[in-house]
Image (tube, rainbow, N blue to C red; front, top):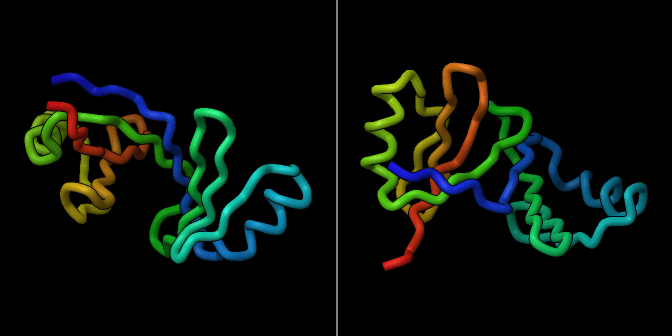
Length: 109
């Protein structure tokens, strides 16, 4: 099983809409307000500030070949599901050390 770290990082926060003023005006980042998140892009890095009332903090992302196979594999190795919406949507897992990450099924092949 291969896990490839992507350049997509999410920050979960219940008040994501107010974050634009901070990231744009205070830090001077290029921001774009989307329907349900704030998108900040800096060359290759994509940061998404997203609403989440249950989860706080940073969520990294891994490309994998099959989200369901990866889910089963990770659960056998101590991970738990935090949020599961299925292929093409949020598939958050938490590892035994506290890292929360999204599984994204790549479309290579």
